[in-house]
Amino acid sequence: MSTKGASLKGLLLVALLVSHMLLTKEGVTSLPICPNGSVNCQLSLEELFDRAVKLSHYIHFLSSEIFNEFDERYAQGRGFIAKAVNSCHTASLTTPEDKEQAQQIHNTAQANIVKHDDANDKLQKCNCIEHEDLLNLILGVLRSWNDPLIHLASEVQRIKEAPETILWKAVEIEEQNKRLLEGMEKIVGRVHSGEVENDIYTPWEGLPSLQLADEDSRLFAFYNLLHCLRRDSHKIDNYLKVLKCRLIHDNNC
Image 1 (cartoon, rainbow, N blue to C red):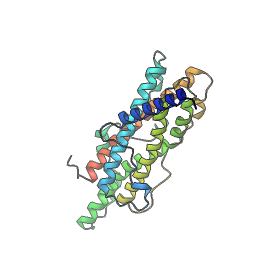
Image 2 (image 1 turned 135 degrees about the horizontal axis):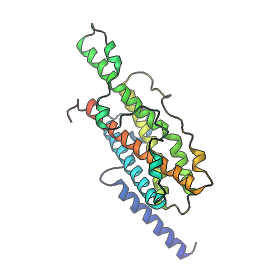
Image 3 (image 1 turned 90 degrees about the vertical axis):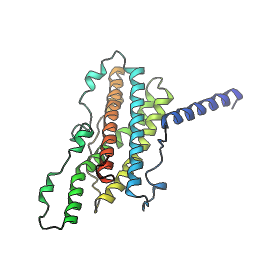
Image 4 (image 1 turned 60 degrees about the vertical axis):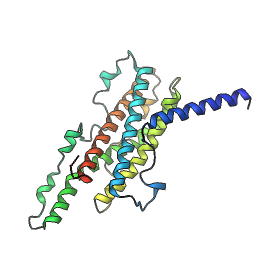
């Protein structure tokens, strides 16, 4: 390799490292929920939630950044936003829109608590039932994004003159979504005894749209996917904060 080529490669690596440092911001890291993917995670429930909340916030930050960058570079003047409303593949999952709605989630099965249970047992059952729907929603949304994020990371490379920052963020979001899902499965395993449900998710059928020959249609498919990713990552971030407040701080936050 020539001296000039090595110099250009070095500059690119420095630029990517600086970009990564800026994106991780204040103490937001991409560390796994449990060290080394440990099966027998020794972290407390509070520590698991702390890491999950930081990771979900990081994912939402990246999702907002990649959407804004794509919007500015490819979507201006195309009228994409009007067509993107309510067309997310996760729309079939009934999800609260914000933290206020999430705080009101209660499973109607609470009414089935046996009257003769002692006070502690009753409280434990009530808490488990109360949080079950919200935990399952988080798992369902995260699983629903596994497939589209894999294809987003690969197909975005085909976009004409796609900047390195967009390519890097797409790969990073895919990796961190997997880590957050693993962490949430550990949290659910701590909160609820028994097996974690794996069948709650919404299939994605949008790959052909990302491969369309018509440029406007293809760019809209990317825009819509990134718009939905930003929306859903914000919801997950809110849900986790609500659950942490309930389960760790007994609603005193």
